[in-house]
Length: 218
Ligand SMILES: *Cc1c(COP(=O)(O)O)cnc(C)c1O
Image (cartoon, rainbow, N blue to C red):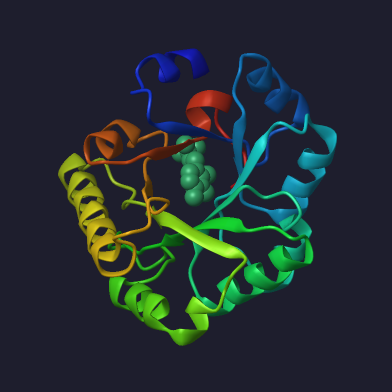
């Protein structure tokens, strides 16, 4: 399945294989056919897998991140998709500095109608980026946005939300990153909606169940 997904992808789209809850042996199989980016949503689990698996894997944190857990992953995490507050960003900055690193981050923007979906409103994202405290953070780099669409069969709703995310991306790009070539990523699209996401401008897709099979627990 992994190969089939890759075959249908434009070259410039990055595929994150979401391996949360999956065993190291399952990840190894996907690694062996060439996949190098894996996504996890729990810090302890990601740390353990990082230690057991080859070091040329890029580990992406895709789940809600608590400040006190950042130190577990600060040494190696390649991209944090789920930054949703200035406070979290400050902690990431502090932990990254301890390892002499600059950690790439995406701002998670709320696009779904569902109450349960986390993330910043576009206004909150703008507030964060305008803030003097943000400008002092030298060990993080914001390289784009992330969003999750409503979980629904209605493709028009999903498409509309991804379109909105792209508009938000462009707004932030123009207002805050016009001369910053690193700000270029839109992380959108999961197993059920990644084709729509790509059509609407996604540059990073996060696919779990299509690659690994269904998960028992979330
Ligand atoms: C679990 C998860 C995914 C992958 O979901 P699938 O439907 O299994 O592809 C993508 N993004 C986030 C944030 C997730 O938590």
